[in-house]
Structures are given as C-alpha cells and as structure tokens.
Length: 78
Image 1 (cartoon, rainbow, N blue to C red):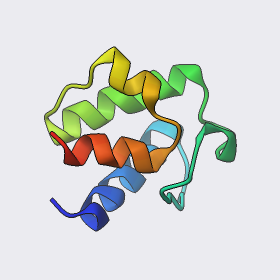
Image 2 (cartoon, rainbow, N blue to C red):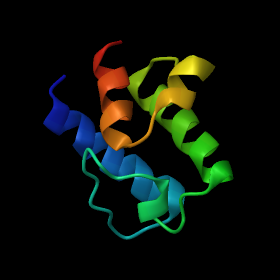
Image 3 (cartoon, rainbow, N blue to C red):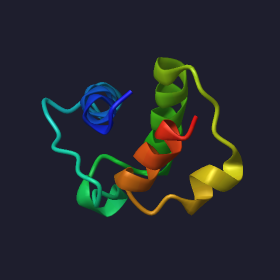
Image 4 (spheres, rainbow, N blue to C red):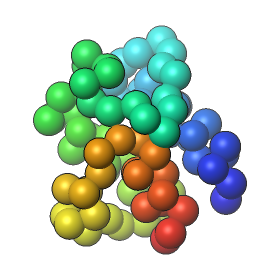
C-alpha cells in the first residue's frame, strides 16, 4: 500500500474517531495540532487503525511516535 493511500484511510479514521468533518493530516501532524486528539482518543485511533489495516502495534512502537508520519512508517513496515 502506498503512503498516499494510507493517508487517505487515516484521514477517514481521524474524522470518524474524533468526530470531525474533515482533517488535513501530514507527516508532521501531531496531537498538539488537533484539539480533539487527547489521550483517550489516541487509544481509540490506534484501535481503529489496527482494525482497518489488520495489524497490531507494540506499546514500544506507539510510544516512539512523535507525529503522523512516524505512524504511517509503522503501518508501511507491517
């Protein structure tokens, strides 16, 4: 799956989980950039991403992410 496709799916997931009409994700997007992205919604996002992409992340992988770009890198590596 290409990076562009992953971003498209992530945009849909973020909109659904965070109850947003639209969101513009980039490699540098982080929780500080999106008001609705808090610790609880972060867990919900991870669960939705794992379900959508049929993958599992380790706690260590998740803790290392600093932005959406690193999240996409993890998805691509699976």
